[in-house]
Image (cartoon, rainbow, N blue to C red; front, side, top):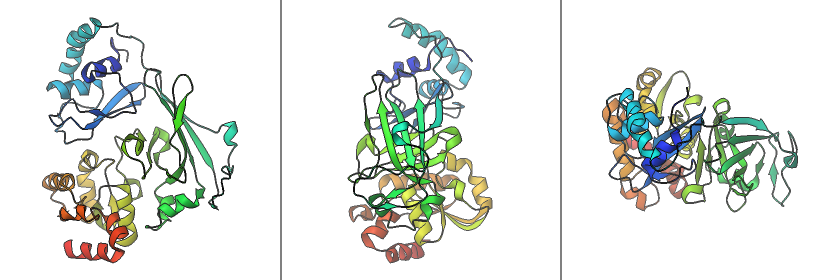
Length: 362
């Protein structure tokens, strides 16, 4: 439906700067908004948002589109109030400083493609002296085209054959789980602007990278470069509805453990033999809480076992207060000892340390 305003203009009015889909901004909703926790993504002609901090969401936002953004920011009691505020106040205010574009946002085009210089299905990667592990190699390329103003544009390519340095990174888990959980090496993650210039965040020997593929039909993925810091460590698209590990859960089971990350999920599966899920960010538990009743029906016992830090303990407390699930609070001093999560316990101590901690605290 056409509206007399552009989503981007409204978001930029509150941000005070140009909107970039691949940048996290300080929250405009919270007093502790000095940390970059507010992000945006484009889906089906609309720009949506997510706040990864400790946000008390206004129950009237409906969905996290631009109207929901204004409802959250201004504290309105309905989406109708938010929509009226945009048209009656924000549009005139923005018009005073610039002309608002009335063109709708371009459609998000996301389709498989294989480029000529990458050859076609079954192509072998460029030889650089690495040992290549054979896994019926295929290369799938996705091109995500976003509005020109929201630059740069990413080009994501994944492959199903593994280099030795990529395979070695996951040596702490049962690596057969990589296929079960749709984890692939990131062949290329390049960001291009309108001039065709850009940089590549694909997997290399110095900095291996991996793609978690959630749902190809809705372009849902996350890219992880464990040795990077800052914004290059994680890149994602359309994951606001994702519960990591949910797709792999059985219809019923004895124990479900809620952990902080995909790595910890795989560690729990490997060494404890329990099913596990995690949010897409350490403080974003809304999707999990919405399925509280379903999880209670499917599993006999549910535990919340997050990182050994203040954020993990605080998130555990909030989830347990709402669900009555079983909490596990690792001592805060574990963080200083390098064992703040399940993966650290295995790598920096031993699998036995993890299993004994679990047996003594469940």
